[in-house]
Structure formats: C-alpha cells, structure tokens
Amino acid sequence: MNNLQTYQTFYFVGIGGIGMSALARYFNASGKKVLGYDKTNTKLTQNLMNEGIDIVFEDLIDERITSLQKENTLVIYTPAIKTLGILDYFNQNQFEVLKRAKVLGLITENTDCIAIAGTHGKTTTSTLVAHLCKEADLPFSCFLGGISENFKSNFLYNGSTYSVVEADEYDRSFLNLSPDWAVVTSTDADHLDIYGDKSHIEEGFRQFAALVPQDKQLFVRKGLEIGRGHQTYAVNEPADYYSDNLRMDHDKIYFDFHTPTETIKDFVWEIPGIHNVENATVALAILHNLGADFDTLKKAIANFKGIKRRYTKHIYQNGKIYIDDYAHHPTEINAVMGSIKTFYPDKKLLVAFQPHLFSRTRDFADGFAESLSKADELILLDIYPARELQENFEGVTSSWLLEKVTLDKKEVSTLTDAFEKIKEKDFDILLTVGAGNIDTLYDPICEWISTVQSTM
Image (cartoon, rainbow, N blue to C red):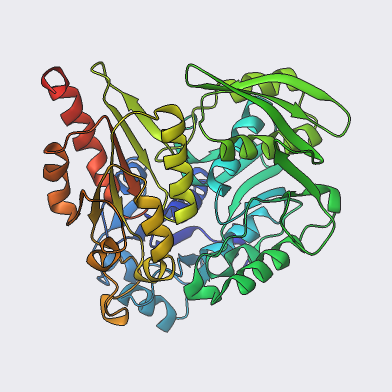
C-alpha cells in the first residue's frame, strides 16, 4: 500500500456514517479531492456537500467513478455495507480498498493517540477529551462518533501532536489503532452478531487494552477486568482518579475530583447523569496527565455543551420538555430514563423508541422491555434494519417486542406515522430515542411544540 500522502483522491463508500464523515472531513481539510456514495441523503451528507465534498446517492458507475485513477485514489469503506456495485467496481479494477478503521489507524500512527473505547460512553468521553484539549490549547485533531455541540462537527484540526479518536469495537475495528493513551468505559455485551457472546467481547477489549504501551496511560473504569496493569477511575468510591460529593442545583451538577495526590472541589456542568460524571472523571484524569491546569479544566467542564442526540433537551415556556437521545442498548436507555426520572420524578413521560438492528433487538429483548416499561406511555417504531434483513430474523419484530413491555399504554408505529401519533398524546416530557433514522422527527417535533405551545 502507498503512503497516505501519495493519494490525491479519496472515495468513501458509505460517506454519511458518523465515523466515515470525520475521515472525509480530515482529507478534505488537507486539500485532497474527496467524493463518495451513501444510500441516504441526511443533514450530515448535506453538510459535507456544503463543505465541497461530492456525494451521490445511487449505486451507479458513472463518469465520476470511471475517471478515477487507481494509482492516486484510495477507496475507504465501512463494513456496514456488505454488497454494492460501486465497491465491486473498485475491487475488480484493483484500486486500493481499505476499511475505515485501517485508515484511521494509519492517520494516528504518527501522533500521540488518545483512544476512547467502551460499549457505552465512548462518544461523550472522546468528545469531552477533545473539548478539554481545545480549551487547554493542545495541538490535536479529533475523530468523533457524534457531533460536538461546541465544535458543531465530528472533526476538528488544532494541530497534529495528539489525536483523539473514538475506538469502535464493532467488527473489532479498534484493534487497528495504535493508542498511546486509552480509556475503557464499559465492556457490556453488544454486537453479538460479531462477537457471539459476552466473553468474546470482553476478550476483544483485553486485546485493545494490550495495545497501550504503558500501564499508567491506560484508564479503566473500576470493576472491569482488563487483563493488565492500568489506572482506575470511578464515581462515589475511591480509585486512582475519582469524583464524589455530587450535588444537583437547578439542572447543574457539582462534584469534587480526586487525583492520587490532591482534591479539586466544585467542578460544575450541565450534563445529567452519574454515568456522565464518570466520563468527566476520566477525561479530567487524562488531561491532568497531559499537563493541563485545573483552572483551565474547570472552565472547560463548565462550558461543555455536550453532543447532538446525547440527551439534547428543550424546555418550552408552557413547561413541556423534549429530549432526544441516541441510546440503542438497554443500559443506555436506563441511563437516559434514570436521569429524566431523577430530575423530573412527577412528570408524565412519553417515549418514542426505534430499535436498531434485528439482532440487537433479539439479543436484548428482555432488557429493552424492562427499560421501556419505565415510561408512562410508549410508541414503539418499526425496527431499523441498517445492514440486516428481516428474512434472516423471522419473528423478530416490534410487535413481538411490544408484547414483552408491561405498560398499558403502548403501541407500534411506522416512522411515517409516528409524528402524528405523538401530536395526539398527552405528556409532560417527550423522549425520542434510537440510533436509526428516528432523528428525522427532531425538527418537526421542535417546530410543532414551539408553534402550538400556547394552546397545549
């Protein structure tokens, strides 16, 4: 394979994915020609096109593809795409074709790479680490799995000494990285279509942790077995780095942060949930080890705005609240709903949830049912298939899942009908949640609540 610098053109197969788009933005910012394909035109692909990237949405071999030269074109694809005529063309014509994770690994080889891994929490933690690096004015670039509300992007270039990357366990992608620093936030069972069972996903995280050269630069949430020396972090219990004395005041959370040698009191931010204080704890630990001072870190924590679709909250004048979140695993849904119940224990909660993948719905059906039963009313959308086919998962449907939910007020809906159903409901808080295309409801819901709030 040629050195990345020798390629002048980069073609992305599945460019609209959150990880793929960050890479596309990197090469576009580097002055390279970037183009690609995606199945669906979304806000993200529109933003990429506005940035000068050429994207098509049909699987056609046109002049834009046939004019590419294999000597100076690198094709990057996501393993979520199994079959595609465009990808077949590049393989048949002997173009260099690499997975996204391999290319990300190559980019970060020549940096001090800070890799954030975990089945939950990695997007918030990596975005927060990047935000703290920016506020501390460290020379870094970041490749994130969500859109930072501070950066308004999933990519930022502020130098090349450090790289902050979200280390994705899907398809064992994170084993392509060369982390100098790393975090493991959680090793819960997920992606069982890849790993088979919990023991194999835990082994995958142990293999990732083994890539970090020094014990003191590997940070693991206390209680996880990772198979090698590391530093621990926790909330409300002693660890190498931990936070405690959590207090809530007017939607703000205060906490104290402990290093092995000192205590820094009264950090404050607006991101809800004990799990997010855990994420803040390890982000502070890393930046402290990189030499950032605590006055800077306090200010940075206070002005962190979060990530799009991670507990994105709107409060309206009539008291109605709308929250949108990306959660797609029972543990994540429990965290979101737990935060809502903590802040608003007496308010009526309507949940609209879109399951993501037939395999995940099947593997965690009882967990989903238990989580969703904590709502007051549920609209369960059809399963978003992504890379999977219904014919391979006979009987795994939203109607099947709904039968396991113990609520009285519950129903199944298509995405097309969901907005009209929501408008008919009586609620104090609306939560839309899921990792598929349920986010297309976000703008209509915001516009609807704001225009009708005076008569609701």
